Image (cartoon, rainbow, N blue to C red; front, side, top):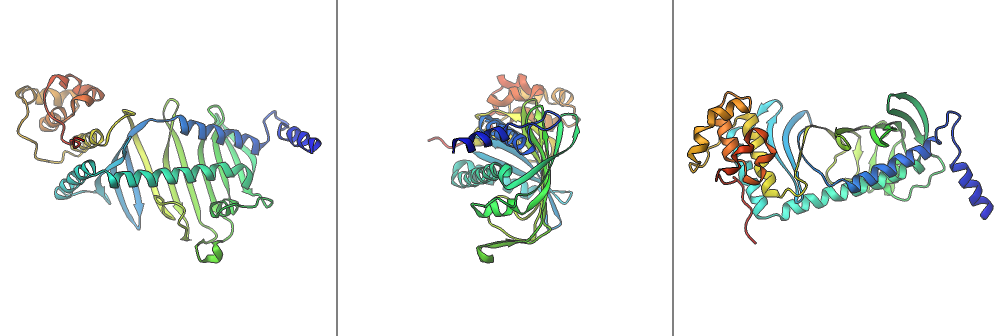
Length: 337
């Protein structure tokens, strides 16, 4: 037993002819670092989300908070959302803030999906056989195919063992950059009673460094034929793009996030919401000046962006940082305990 252990240890430390570790061991290192980075990352972001399903494209502004993610639909298939629907969304956000059970449920489902994704990542070095491909600067290509000796312990693992494709990693930062793959054969769960996926289905996932040291999901493209209920927030046919990342406070609450969403939608889409009449004369007087500072010719937009930005968040918007001395209230309020 000791001799076998020593043999395995020596084999695992063997390097390739160019001094690199064996491909599967390199992938194991990358995934270990990726999971540790995710564990240590408590950052929150505001971003633009574009999804495409059944020929319909929807664009949303999204803000991540410690209570869960909030979103605001701004266009469908290239057309702005009507004002009455925007008002409904505003009311819906206030209901979420006042009754957070639904928000907690969606956060729990997202956390469960993240845990499943992490379990899948951990399987990759065992379920697949990797080999080095080309290198482009810091990016290293690793081609993979199923490991015929792997015995899948779960339904998710059965899918992993049926994949072949390509993984790109950032070798310098030891982070996953892209993975694309396809199913080489059909997969059935519980003899087909619990679901199935047909051969030929494919997927593509891309991560990007949105700020130095911070990597976020940028593209998810899944095109599978069949039915599998692994993920509660990801379908077997889904296309998603995330962009325009802007960091927000790590301790951002749902109420604070809703106010950020409102300001972002109001200033970018110039939706003509009615605003409360109780705005200070100082805010009114500086409307045109703020318009020039914020790069817009709409004084009303700049006025609302200034007067409706909550006091504790105004420093996050440099053109409006001086508004902190105004007494304008936030649009969304959490109910007192």
